[in-house]
Image (cartoon, rainbow, N blue to C red; front, side, top):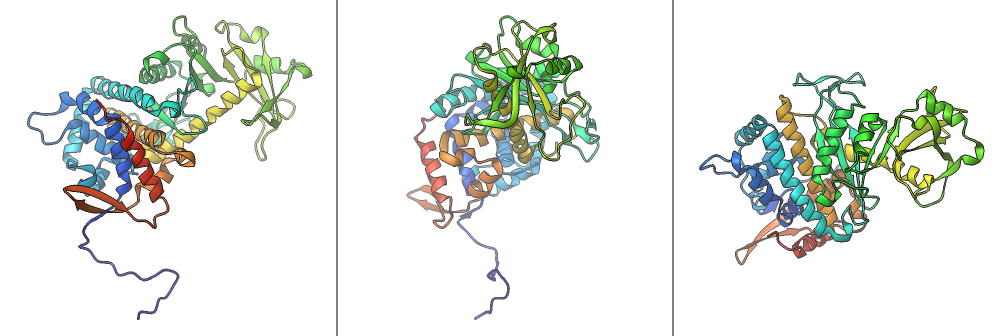
Length: 458
């Protein structure tokens, strides 16, 4: 008997094992791809880039990279972990074949991007119908959050420049559909920009909003049922005017910079005009009040715009700015929504902070760095990241229930995707048997059952 020393058991390690599948929980993503028809849509979209007599389908190559990123990879070579498990992921192309496809798509430029985005929009419409009451439009409104992301670069890459935070890299502008408090969110736009791109560039916000709207079902591409939320970077005359343009009629809730005119207007607001802010549960938010401004501060802005300001005691350690007043932090936003109390509108705008969670998840899903050199290649990489994030949002929406539906990518990988299983062949069919002692085996099997119950794509 070997005496154990230390806190952990001593295990002998050797190679040659058979029948075990690592990352077996990734079958959840594979089934999501199959049930949503994403594989068929991407394959059809990328058919022009498949060479005659090619062994591997271009669409599957791109999806394999997206699956690898969804499972935690951060470069093209990480597709190798799928190649090691052909029983789950099928035949996977070699690294040179993957690189050649990315180069070909990058060389095609807008044509390839348009093909990928059109396929994603078509599948998204189908997924939302499958999700039913769990879909982000179940309440009759779709909320799109637009925000910028700083992506650091540690080597010379095209368009990598100094950023406003005195770092070096790129400054993409991204848009996410908010799934509300019961879910996560899914990306609908990613515009690659140089690191020195401005935070409040109206043309970039308009371009990102156009990409985002094109990803939504057709009935949400215009009209009040679609709400665009941004921070103060979107609070420009040009962008707000574009959102409110006749025939587009989008709802908006955009942060606004506290100018001297707004600051002076706040000082003139009488005490009875301030209303206490509220929390999501309806309870009073301690030390916060909201009021609506009117008069000259609205001059030059689109008709129907409302300007709402909040004053709040700063959090411990926060420093006041010269635009604050009476020791209270001032924030302001503009909206064109009518018929709701200003405290409810302020709470709705404050929930824009969930976009920061979406950005954190994107960083954990391939956006920590842009691994390629050319800007066109990295734009394709952004599309791959969005496909991976789509899968990480669609799978919980279609297959998970309760608290598990809110799990973020890191937790999904740790608890579900990393689970190992035994591969057993019975009656010419392959079965994955997950360990009974794994705490989340029932979550995996229940999710697979829900996916199996969905209709197969036509």
